[in-house]
Length: 143
Length: 118
Ligand SMILES: Nc1ncnc2c1ncn2[C@@H]1O[C@H](COP(=O)(O)OP(=O)(O)OP(=O)(O)O)[C@@H](O)[C@H]1O
Ligand SMILES: [Mg+2]
Image 1 (tube, chains in turn yellow, red):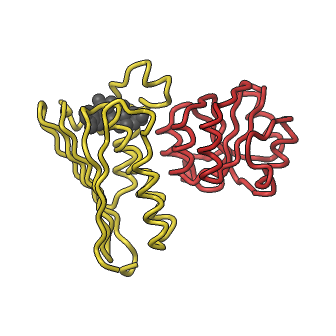
Image 2 (cartoon, chains in turn red, purple):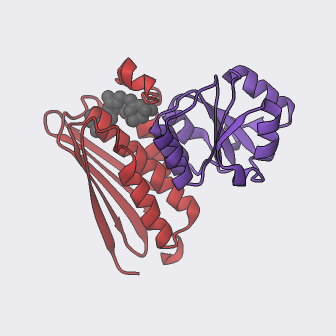
């Protein structure tokens, strides 16, 4: 299996299409015959990050690359950035509005979920610039 | 527990997935916040929720949820039912509230997802 990479553009407030990128990612991984437990972890992490881009960011991209040893997801947005990343990472911390909560989001579990699903998780955020989240999931025996 | 038994015990309507009623679920999980669903559910779960937007189906798709049971008589729009069909997720609806639904299913032997088992 060679290296495979895809990019998905995510628009701010586009609730109609939110989840489409993650759905496509899940289908791609299934076609590659990757272990269903790993697919599930990638899909959940990708979906959480996709929803965050729609709700909290001004828009961005999700890139996924697959090599024989691992799957890498990089989410990059164009702002507004996260003021206190440590706080944002806490279970239950959310700045989501009541309207967002009525749609089923704002538990403050998205970032902790991503961290739990990934074998490695990095977040970097600069106010006024944007946020980059890098997640890697290892594949067993170069699947 | 088979989806058929769940339907019968709640007198629920099957909105999509008549052919999936022989499928078994091991757990039920009730929530209206999708990240809680993503954090807790395991495969072989039926999701009980009062939320009826497309993100419920997307959430179920990502987490490999077997079936969704809408409570309080909620019925989603046709395009949301279509999305469930595309992902082979059975969807049912019951007039019961979340609490009553949970009590009935628990008394039929279905169990929740407990923290220590995650
Ligand atoms: N891409 C982002 N840009 C700006 N702020 C963000 C971004 N992602 C997360 N945040 C901030 O971090 C907080 C915590 O994010 P997290 O995903 O854990 O919870 P949530 O999105 O509020 O709720 P949930 O994910 O449970 O539906 C958010 O409420 C928001 O303030
Ligand atoms: Mg989130």
